[in-house]
Length: 70
Image (cartoon, rainbow, N blue to C red; front, side):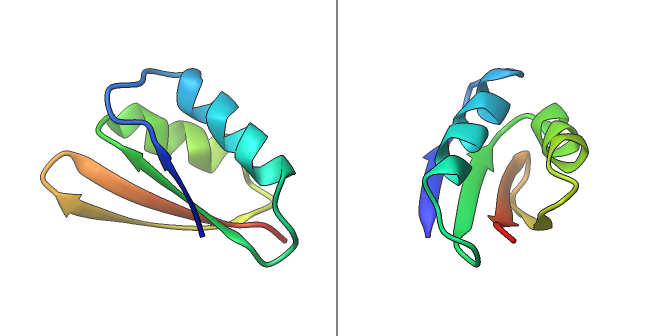
């Protein structure tokens, strides 16, 4: 699993980082995006609709978003 640290990053930076990471992965691989902005979660859900996405708020205001490449 590849982890992308997007703490403190505002959109569109996390989306660009995630796109770049997904390009280098094989089908079935997972990217974990760590963010402290709720707008990033919404942007990921809107920009990567073809992917399986799950997420968890690990501490108040910090999310881990898991994206599985189809």
